[in-house]
Length: 217
Image (cartoon, rainbow, N blue to C red):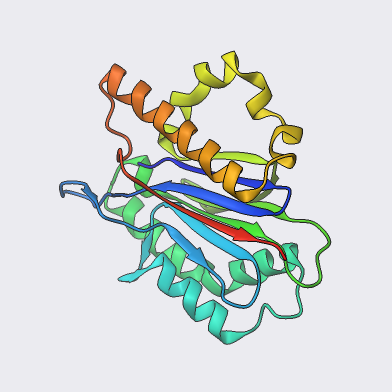
């Protein structure tokens, strides 16, 4: 139950995330900050889907992982693999529990998106780690994503708008924007999604959002 937009642009990365916080058998709250920034390298992590594992929030795991400094000698692809090893047992336990409790499918999936670069990388990259739990147990997939990334249930509200404005969905569009321009474009896209959601009577994500950009020096 979310909408998060992210992009790589010519001098950095930008993320625009809704604030919806959903728990089983409770009223959704729009008070969740979904963006985690590393301190030493230009790297942002955000989460959608299940975000609490063994009573600890997703960003607490990110902070613990960062402080372990196991990521220091890796490239982005290596960090993703190393983070998977760090957190997967907890993800497995939580998604398995939700499955055994017959919760809906939205509580059987969790996604972590990594945006940025390390000192060992040449280019900015976006990778998504995807976990799901089904009849065959825990399934995992990692994908290297393009410049504009739409995450969460709310992404379909932008389908018609991007069909009418195909240039916005092209890599070279974002490659020519700096972070100030990219942040503004993500805001506009988010508000277009809000407009369409409200027109159709949906409630998949909050109208309010947070943004975060990191400039590459």
